[in-house]
Image (cartoon, rainbow, N blue to C red):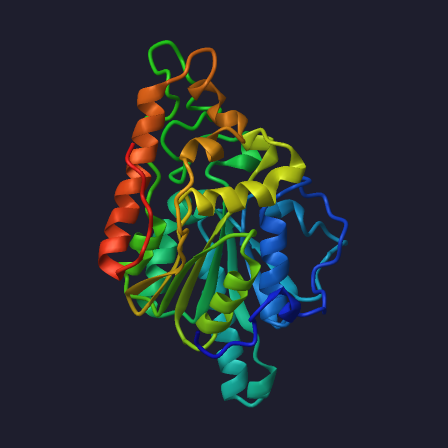
Length: 320
C-alpha cells in the first residue's frame, strides 16, 4: 500500500462541508460521494455544476455548502472551470492572493453531461491540460428529466425511452459507453472509478489524484431510487453488489497505466444485482429472459478474464 492518511473508515475527516437537509431525492447515491469529496479536499474547492439532478442542491438564497458553487449549462462546465482556474492563476501571479490561498476547481456533472452533451468541451479541456477534477455521478440515465436513456445506460435496462416491448423485450439494446477509456485515450494524469459503498478506496484515490496537475476524472457509481426503482435504504447495498458482481470495477489509471484497486475474490452472479432494481424486472417477469441474463453475465466474465490475465490477479470466474 502506498503511503496514505486513509487506512480505515476511522480516518474519514470529521469536519462537514455539506450541511444536511436539501431537496435531493432520498437515497441518492451521489450525496455521500459529494460529501466525501469535500472532506478529502478539506472544503477548499469551487464546484462548477452542469445542469442535472444536482441543480436542485443549491437554490438561492439557500446553500448547504461551506465552499463555492457555480451553475453552468449542460455542455459548459469545463469551460466554466477553465475561466475560474485562469482567474485564480492570474490572481496568484499578480500577488492579489497567496499561493496557499489557492483552491481546487471541480466539475460536477451527471452522466448526461459527461458521456453525451458535455463530452466535446470536456475533450477540449483535457487537451488544454486544464488543472481540474471532473466528478461524475453516473446514474445511467437522464434522471432529472424523467429517466430517459443516456450514453451511460447499460444493455437491457428499462428507461422512459427504452421500455421493453413485444418486439424489443430486453429494453435497451445498446451498450454503455466506456468513459474511463475515452478519458484515458486523451492521456490525462489521473482517471478513476469510485463507489459510495467503498469510501476508503474513494478517499485514497482523491488523495492520490491531488498529487498531479492536470485533468483528473472520477466516475462514481450512483444508485438512483427514483429511476432504478429500488428502496431508498438499498443504495449502498446495491453499490456493494455492483462491485462484488463485477458490474462496476474499481480501478485507476495513472498516466495511462491501469490498476484495479479492489478485486472480488469470487464474482457473485450478476442476477443478484439485477434483481435489486425495477428497471430490470422485465428480465424475470412475466417470463425469464435467460439469453439476456446470460449475455450480461458473459460480458462481465470476459472483462474480468482480460483483467486477470493482464494484471495477474487471482479471481475465481465461474462458467456461464
